[in-house]
Image (cartoon, rainbow, N blue to C red; front, side):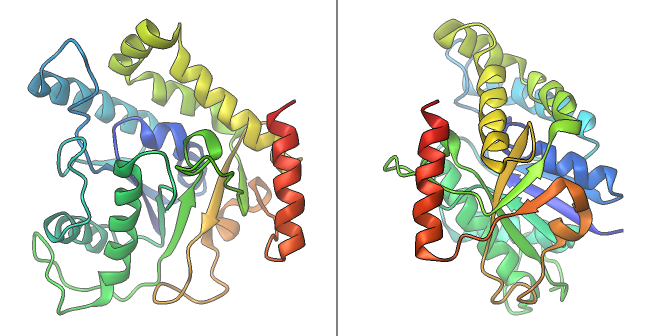
Length: 275
Protein backbone atom coordinates (compact mmCIF):
# COMPACT_ATOMS: atom_id res chain seq x y z
CA UNK A 1 0.00 0.00 0.00
CA UNK A 2 1.40 3.39 -0.98
CA UNK A 3 1.19 6.24 1.50
CA UNK A 4 0.66 10.00 1.35
CA UNK A 5 1.12 12.60 4.06
CA UNK A 6 -0.36 16.09 4.29
CA UNK A 7 1.90 18.44 6.26
CA UNK A 8 0.40 21.80 7.19
CA UNK A 9 1.00 24.53 9.74
CA UNK A 10 -2.11 24.63 11.95
CA UNK A 11 -5.13 22.50 12.85
CA UNK A 12 -7.73 23.12 10.07
CA UNK A 13 -5.15 24.01 7.36
CA UNK A 14 -5.21 20.48 5.91
CA UNK A 15 -9.01 20.51 5.85
CA UNK A 16 -9.08 23.91 4.17
CA UNK A 17 -6.46 23.39 1.44
CA UNK A 18 -5.65 19.69 1.04
CA UNK A 19 -8.31 17.36 2.46
CA UNK A 20 -10.18 16.75 -0.80
CA UNK A 21 -7.09 15.34 -2.46
CA UNK A 22 -6.25 13.31 0.64
CA UNK A 23 -9.77 11.82 0.65
CA UNK A 24 -9.50 10.85 -3.02
CA UNK A 25 -6.17 9.14 -2.37
CA UNK A 26 -7.80 7.25 0.51
CA UNK A 27 -10.60 6.13 -1.82
CA UNK A 28 -7.95 4.99 -4.32
CA UNK A 29 -6.53 2.62 -1.71
CA UNK A 30 -3.70 4.72 -0.33
CA UNK A 31 -2.71 4.92 3.32
CA UNK A 32 -3.04 8.57 4.34
CA UNK A 33 -1.49 10.62 7.13
CA UNK A 34 -1.94 14.17 8.41
CA UNK A 35 0.39 16.31 10.49
CA UNK A 36 -0.02 19.86 11.73
CA UNK A 37 3.37 21.25 12.71
CA UNK A 38 1.87 23.72 15.22
CA UNK A 39 -0.58 23.07 18.02
CA UNK A 40 -3.05 25.88 17.27
CA UNK A 41 -2.16 27.49 20.63
CA UNK A 42 -2.88 31.03 19.41
CA UNK A 43 -6.27 30.21 17.90
CA UNK A 44 -8.43 31.66 20.65
CA UNK A 45 -9.12 34.94 22.41
CA UNK A 46 -11.07 33.44 25.32
CA UNK A 47 -8.88 30.49 26.45
CA UNK A 48 -5.26 30.40 27.57
CA UNK A 49 -2.69 28.55 25.46
CA UNK A 50 -2.94 25.27 27.40
CA UNK A 51 -6.73 25.09 27.05
CA UNK A 52 -6.55 26.08 23.39
CA UNK A 53 -3.95 23.39 22.65
CA UNK A 54 -6.15 20.75 24.28
CA UNK A 55 -9.32 21.81 22.45
CA UNK A 56 -7.66 22.02 19.07
CA UNK A 57 -5.89 18.69 19.53
CA UNK A 58 -9.22 16.97 20.11
CA UNK A 59 -10.77 18.75 17.12
CA UNK A 60 -7.87 17.71 14.88
CA UNK A 61 -8.15 14.08 15.93
CA UNK A 62 -11.89 14.03 15.22
CA UNK A 63 -11.25 15.52 11.81
CA UNK A 64 -8.54 12.98 11.00
CA UNK A 65 -11.02 10.22 11.85
CA UNK A 66 -13.50 11.64 9.32
CA UNK A 67 -10.71 11.83 6.73
CA UNK A 68 -9.69 8.26 7.49
CA UNK A 69 -6.10 9.41 8.00
CA UNK A 70 -3.48 8.57 10.60
CA UNK A 71 -3.01 11.56 12.89
CA UNK A 72 0.45 12.76 13.97
CA UNK A 73 0.77 15.14 16.90
CA UNK A 74 2.06 18.72 16.58
CA UNK A 75 5.73 19.60 17.03
CA UNK A 76 5.56 23.17 18.41
CA UNK A 77 3.24 26.09 19.15
CA UNK A 78 1.82 28.69 16.75
CA UNK A 79 4.28 31.30 15.47
CA UNK A 80 7.15 29.03 16.55
CA UNK A 81 7.44 27.25 13.19
CA UNK A 82 10.94 28.32 12.28
CA UNK A 83 13.27 26.84 9.70
CA UNK A 84 15.63 25.35 12.26
CA UNK A 85 17.37 22.07 12.99
CA UNK A 86 15.29 20.80 15.92
CA UNK A 87 12.02 20.91 13.98
CA UNK A 88 13.69 19.59 10.83
CA UNK A 89 15.03 16.53 12.65
CA UNK A 90 11.58 15.75 14.09
CA UNK A 91 9.74 16.21 10.80
CA UNK A 92 12.34 14.15 8.91
CA UNK A 93 11.76 11.41 11.47
CA UNK A 94 8.05 11.37 10.59
CA UNK A 95 8.86 11.20 6.87
CA UNK A 96 11.11 8.19 7.43
CA UNK A 97 8.43 6.54 9.56
CA UNK A 98 5.61 7.07 7.04
CA UNK A 99 7.71 6.39 3.87
CA UNK A 100 5.39 8.49 1.67
CA UNK A 101 5.23 8.47 -2.10
CA UNK A 102 3.34 11.80 -1.96
CA UNK A 103 3.88 14.78 0.33
CA UNK A 104 1.17 17.47 0.24
CA UNK A 105 2.16 20.77 1.83
CA UNK A 106 1.72 24.55 1.72
CA UNK A 107 2.66 26.87 -1.10
CA UNK A 108 6.22 28.27 -0.96
CA UNK A 109 4.54 31.69 -1.18
CA UNK A 110 1.76 32.47 1.28
CA UNK A 111 0.39 35.22 3.47
CA UNK A 112 2.00 34.10 6.75
CA UNK A 113 5.36 32.75 7.83
CA UNK A 114 4.01 29.66 9.62
CA UNK A 115 2.75 28.39 6.24
CA UNK A 116 5.93 29.30 4.37
CA UNK A 117 8.24 27.77 6.99
CA UNK A 118 6.15 24.61 7.15
CA UNK A 119 6.59 24.29 3.40
CA UNK A 120 10.36 24.74 3.68
CA UNK A 121 10.63 22.19 6.49
CA UNK A 122 8.48 19.64 4.62
CA UNK A 123 10.56 19.96 1.45
CA UNK A 124 13.88 19.60 3.28
CA UNK A 125 12.61 16.71 5.42
CA UNK A 126 11.55 14.87 2.27
CA UNK A 127 14.89 15.66 0.59
CA UNK A 128 16.84 14.30 3.59
CA UNK A 129 14.92 11.03 3.72
CA UNK A 130 17.74 9.01 2.11
CA UNK A 131 20.73 10.64 3.82
CA UNK A 132 22.03 8.22 6.50
CA UNK A 133 24.35 10.87 7.94
CA UNK A 134 21.40 13.16 8.76
CA UNK A 135 20.12 12.25 12.20
CA UNK A 136 16.40 12.42 12.92
CA UNK A 137 14.47 12.69 16.18
CA UNK A 138 13.74 9.97 17.13
CA UNK A 139 16.54 8.18 15.27
CA UNK A 140 15.23 6.41 12.19
CA UNK A 141 17.10 4.76 9.34
CA UNK A 142 17.28 6.51 5.98
CA UNK A 143 14.83 5.34 3.32
CA UNK A 144 15.35 5.05 -0.42
CA UNK A 145 11.88 5.47 -1.88
CA UNK A 146 11.11 8.28 -4.35
CA UNK A 147 8.76 11.00 -3.12
CA UNK A 148 6.84 13.66 -5.05
CA UNK A 149 6.06 16.93 -3.29
CA UNK A 150 2.95 18.93 -4.23
CA UNK A 151 2.27 22.48 -3.09
CA UNK A 152 -1.29 23.59 -2.32
CA UNK A 153 -2.69 26.98 -3.25
CA UNK A 154 -2.02 29.84 -0.80
CA UNK A 155 -4.83 31.48 1.11
CA UNK A 156 -6.57 33.97 -1.16
CA UNK A 157 -4.77 32.38 -4.15
CA UNK A 158 -2.09 35.09 -3.86
CA UNK A 159 1.40 35.35 -2.41
CA UNK A 160 2.37 37.68 0.40
CA UNK A 161 2.71 40.56 -2.06
CA UNK A 162 -0.78 39.93 -3.48
CA UNK A 163 0.47 38.44 -6.76
CA UNK A 164 -1.68 35.68 -8.23
CA UNK A 165 -0.52 32.07 -7.85
CA UNK A 166 -1.60 29.82 -10.73
CA UNK A 167 -2.20 26.06 -10.25
CA UNK A 168 -0.45 23.59 -12.49
CA UNK A 169 -2.76 20.74 -11.48
CA UNK A 170 -6.47 20.64 -10.69
CA UNK A 171 -7.97 17.84 -8.59
CA UNK A 172 -11.72 17.32 -8.74
CA UNK A 173 -12.90 17.39 -5.11
CA UNK A 174 -16.61 17.58 -5.96
CA UNK A 175 -17.28 13.93 -5.03
CA UNK A 176 -15.75 14.41 -1.56
CA UNK A 177 -16.60 18.05 -0.90
CA UNK A 178 -19.21 17.34 1.78
CA UNK A 179 -16.82 15.07 3.67
CA UNK A 180 -14.12 17.74 3.41
CA UNK A 181 -16.59 20.30 4.75
CA UNK A 182 -17.56 18.00 7.64
CA UNK A 183 -13.90 17.54 8.53
CA UNK A 184 -13.35 21.30 8.55
CA UNK A 185 -16.47 21.75 10.69
CA UNK A 186 -14.80 19.61 13.41
CA UNK A 187 -12.70 22.66 14.21
CA UNK A 188 -15.56 24.11 16.17
CA UNK A 189 -13.41 26.50 18.19
CA UNK A 190 -12.38 28.26 14.99
CA UNK A 191 -15.97 28.47 13.80
CA UNK A 192 -17.06 30.16 17.02
CA UNK A 193 -14.10 32.54 16.98
CA UNK A 194 -14.54 33.52 13.33
CA UNK A 195 -18.34 33.69 13.61
CA UNK A 196 -17.88 36.49 16.15
CA UNK A 197 -15.38 38.41 14.07
CA UNK A 198 -16.33 37.63 10.46
CA UNK A 199 -19.90 36.36 10.30
CA UNK A 200 -21.82 33.08 10.52
CA UNK A 201 -19.95 30.04 9.14
CA UNK A 202 -17.36 32.36 7.59
CA UNK A 203 -14.58 29.76 7.51
CA UNK A 204 -16.80 27.13 5.88
CA UNK A 205 -18.02 29.66 3.32
CA UNK A 206 -14.44 30.76 2.64
CA UNK A 207 -13.42 27.16 1.95
CA UNK A 208 -16.46 26.67 -0.31
CA UNK A 209 -15.62 29.87 -2.17
CA UNK A 210 -11.99 28.94 -2.71
CA UNK A 211 -12.81 25.46 -4.02
CA UNK A 212 -15.51 26.86 -6.32
CA UNK A 213 -13.10 29.46 -7.70
CA UNK A 214 -10.42 26.85 -8.39
CA UNK A 215 -13.09 24.60 -9.94
CA UNK A 216 -14.12 27.44 -12.21
CA UNK A 217 -10.51 27.99 -13.23
CA UNK A 218 -10.22 24.32 -14.20
CA UNK A 219 -13.12 24.60 -16.68
CA UNK A 220 -13.77 20.96 -15.82
CA UNK A 221 -14.81 20.58 -12.19
CA UNK A 222 -17.28 22.26 -9.84
CA UNK A 223 -15.11 22.03 -6.70
CA UNK A 224 -11.35 21.62 -7.01
CA UNK A 225 -8.05 21.90 -5.21
CA UNK A 226 -5.10 23.36 -7.09
CA UNK A 227 -1.55 22.05 -6.87
CA UNK A 228 1.95 22.81 -8.11
CA UNK A 229 4.54 20.04 -8.31
CA UNK A 230 7.92 20.63 -6.70
CA UNK A 231 11.14 20.10 -8.66
CA UNK A 232 11.89 16.41 -9.02
CA UNK A 233 15.65 16.83 -8.52
CA UNK A 234 16.66 14.79 -5.49
CA UNK A 235 13.12 13.55 -4.95
CA UNK A 236 11.85 11.34 -7.78
CA UNK A 237 12.04 10.63 -11.51
CA UNK A 238 11.51 13.60 -13.80
CA UNK A 239 8.20 12.32 -15.13
CA UNK A 240 6.87 11.09 -11.78
CA UNK A 241 3.36 12.31 -11.07
CA UNK A 242 1.71 9.88 -8.64
CA UNK A 243 -1.36 12.11 -8.19
CA UNK A 244 -2.09 11.65 -11.89
CA UNK A 245 -1.59 7.91 -11.64
CA UNK A 246 -3.79 7.56 -8.55
CA UNK A 247 -6.66 9.92 -9.35
CA UNK A 248 -7.25 9.30 -13.07
CA UNK A 249 -10.35 11.26 -14.21
CA UNK A 250 -10.31 13.42 -11.08
CA UNK A 251 -6.95 14.86 -12.17
CA UNK A 252 -6.36 17.54 -14.78
CA UNK A 253 -2.94 19.03 -15.49
CA UNK A 254 -2.60 22.31 -17.37
CA UNK A 255 0.71 23.09 -19.05
CA UNK A 256 1.76 26.65 -18.35
CA UNK A 257 5.51 26.70 -18.93
CA UNK A 258 5.61 29.17 -21.82
CA UNK A 259 5.69 32.88 -21.01
CA UNK A 260 2.64 33.61 -23.15
CA UNK A 261 0.87 30.73 -21.39
CA UNK A 262 1.46 32.38 -18.05
CA UNK A 263 0.23 35.69 -19.41
CA UNK A 264 -3.00 34.13 -20.68
CA UNK A 265 -3.53 32.30 -17.39
CA UNK A 266 -3.12 35.48 -15.36
CA UNK A 267 -5.61 37.27 -17.62
CA UNK A 268 -8.11 34.42 -17.31
CA UNK A 269 -7.67 34.10 -13.53
CA UNK A 270 -8.11 37.85 -12.95
CA UNK A 271 -11.28 37.77 -15.05
CA UNK A 272 -12.66 34.83 -13.05
CA UNK A 273 -11.89 36.50 -9.73
CA UNK A 274 -13.69 39.70 -10.72
CA UNK A 275 -16.86 38.08 -12.08
